[in-house]
Length: 185
Image (cartoon, rainbow, N blue to C red; front, side):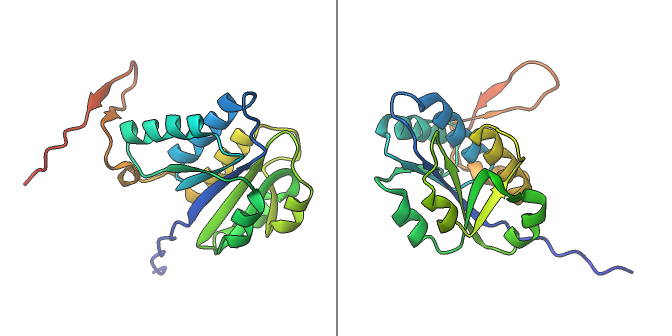
């Protein structure tokens, strides 16, 4: 009889968005934050800070639950230097994700770094892992989504406690219901 498989512990994954262009990238960075939150990341560090975007994402977390937060940072370097765990730079120039995934799954804390239009060359050297989702041009939102899905798998519903509303899954149509705040005894 085969030995029972031990359940793999999910790492804590934070995301660092480098090179957000105020006024030009709010929609793309909002999508990046929404994907990070929905797929299980714990926080987003945003370089440079964008308080309006941070508040919009905080409103989503209040409404749909969870503790995801956006923290503005004036420089990406101290975030990378202070991170105690693996720093994963998602880039089309890195090692294939499938090759690096076994090593990444051994790390308990990860910082996934996604760049904007121009990634500082120093970021490639500062990262512990330069990881390619595909060796073709692609969206940073797509790269982050694939990375989080592979490393975290499906987030547990318990991650989204405190929601004001929830979606009722169904075959057709949309159904959103308020969440009762009443404690069941």
